[in-house]
Length: 300
Image (cartoon, rainbow, N blue to C red; front, side, top):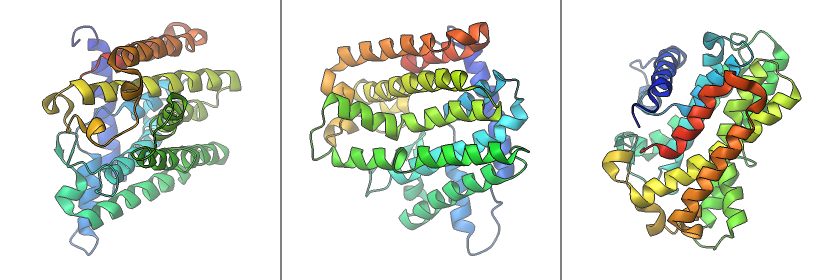
């Protein structure tokens, strides 16, 4: 897979490097002060190794409309802060109760639960501070669109609602349609936001936004199915986090509902759908097509 996706992996790494530089600047410095611990926790979780797939989607979709990387990186950083906030809180004992994240101790294991909660809160609020700043985009209309899209994706109609459904599903059996709805909220919302943010920055037309939204919906669900397959079949060494967790916690997943083979076929079908949504962008979207294939073939 390394050779097959070499160009994509090079580009993912380039965006991740540029993003880390930008986030390092945007994150408050750790100083000898009362809030030092929470600042250190924010940096620890955000600057840790990771796929940075959502920022990559922001940068790549923005480039479809002639938006330069330096401009898109600021919005991408804000979205990554929202993503990391959700990971920190998801790992807490009251939520998914995971001790490892991205191959290292989870934030609450390293800094304690109180600091982890505050670190997540700090990252979420910092994200909106960044999106509201004139340096993100000179147009106040664009900034307001970004803020509204981010609020919907991270709130009760997005990640928060999806996480609540996920917790409830440990006690209540969900139908396949309900599982899909859960995953479109918990995981898919930030994929949609990432693609939409690129379109918002580029002031794209409605038709193009709908196409990118359809692409994001498909890859977001395929991404979650692949994550669940890795949990069922992978190793902690490969994934960087504990495996066999979904079954032991009674998680509602399409793997548990459909079985491994049918779930894998569903993911492949979603990738085909995703690529269909990109037809109007011609060869300019080839890297997004490659990303769609990579999503279901990755090992972590």
